[in-house]
Length: 329
Image 1: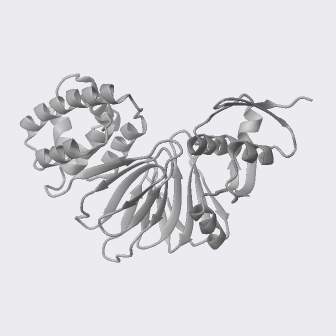
Image 2: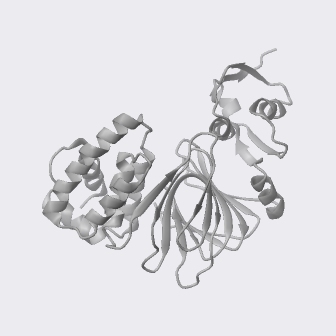
Image 3: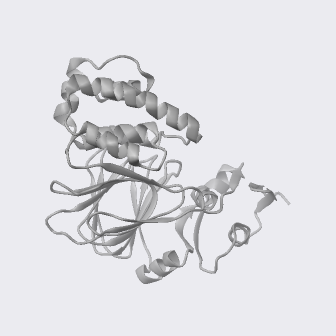
């Protein structure tokens, strides 16, 4: 059974393009706990777009009816319990997220999968069932269970979180992103894993972390003070270092710390935090890298001005639209 065929069928569930062939159904039942299946579901999560509430609600109702039909055929235990948990949620659920919750929730009859979302400029603190704390950055999604059953504690993230994980040597904690699994026992770290960024970045403040590349099973071990960046285009890991205590103070006070980071990714970070739109029309500017810290509640204009200390960028602003080009003067 090829992965492409499985992916095509998962996508077809949103488009109501017929029932699953028997061999696909059997594959899902046998491989629902595998990293490959988790990766496929996360790919769908990453393609999620925000809709207006009315369209999202109507779309979810249609998807729910399709899944009910599939459930009657397969009689998967735990589905109705998960579905009731979904319906009680105050948040508008997006279709790929709902699908992930269905498949993951079907693994345990006692677990409901919950979703937390932040918008641009918003942060949110979530206390997980084991007492671990996750602070969500702007424009972030967190999928987590109502209880951690089994031999690991696993959540799914797309965006940025600062994680303070409770230690449990018998049950490791796993944060799964679209490309990496981050395995910890008890630690504090910052994760930046946005779909549009060129890199996924993990900064370890305390404890120890193991990174697993889902595509080739490579493993990277981190120590406090390490920043590891995963380049999405090349698949390479880049290790950098930082002062862990200073970095934590910056984050706790709402500041920014950019360690050898591409300007294009910095601009995306500023967009999410300040609710602006930044257009950059020069690839050289996009790929310039910076080391910079901002700890005094600087505005987006002040940050850009500091980054443009050499005056090689022309920065203009109209309302929430900021245009950046090369300064030819």
